[in-house]
Amino acid sequence: MIETILPGAVTAVDTFADPPQATLFPEEESLISAAVHKRRAEFTTGRWCARQAMRRIGHHPSAILPGPRGEPRWPDGLVGSITHCPGYRAAVVAPAARVTTVGIDAEVHEPAPPGVLEAVSQAEERDHLAALRRDHPGVHWDRLLFSAKESVYKAWYPLTARWLDFEDARVTFYPATATFTARLDVTGPRLHGADLTGFTGRWVIGNGLLVTAVTILEPALATAA
Image (cartoon, rainbow, N blue to C red):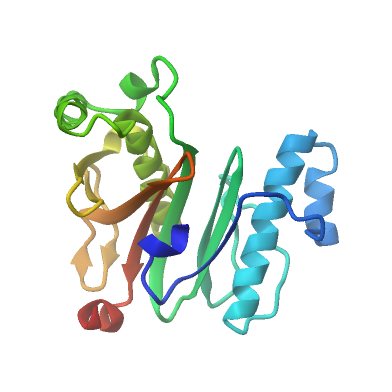
C-alpha cells in the first residue's frame, strides 16, 4: 500500500497482520520485555518490516534501537521510517546516498478524537479543512492532517535532532494529486545549499486506512525525478 506514494529510491515493506516469524534482536527484546502485547506486536512487526526492507537493498539486517525521542536509529548509510496503527505496520528504508530523509505515518481512516484537530492545527488550517470537507466529504481530513504532520516530524527530526510542534508546520492539501505541502514556521536546517522552509508529501487511502509519506531525495535524484 505505502509503496504507491514513495519514490523508487525508497524500499517499503508493509503488512496487515503480525507474522509469527517476526522476532527481535536481544538488545531490542530487553527494551520491550515488560510491554503489553499490543506494544510488543507493534514494535516487533515494525522492525521485522524494516529488516525485510534492508535485505531487499542488500543490507545485512541488524538491531534498530530507539533514540532519545523514540525514533528508530538506523545503521550507518541508511535512512528510514517505521509506522503502525491497528491492522497495519510498515517500514521504509533507503541508502543515505540517495535519500536525505523520509517520514511515514499510518492511521485508521476515521474522524480524529474530539479535541485533536484543535490541538494539532492553526486557524487557517481548520478553514482549509472545512473547505475540503465541503468538496470532498469522503475523506476524514482532520485525521489526514494529523498523519501528514506526523510524517513531517519524522522527516524533520533526523535532520535537526530538534522537536517540531504541530503548530510549527502549516499543511495544505491538494486533492487532485493526493499531495500536500508543509510550510515551516520555524527555522529549518541548511540543506542542499539552501534553507529548508518546508516539505512536500503524498497520501493514499484504502483498506480503511490512510497513509502519508514525506521524502527528500539527494539532489542528483531530485533533478532526475
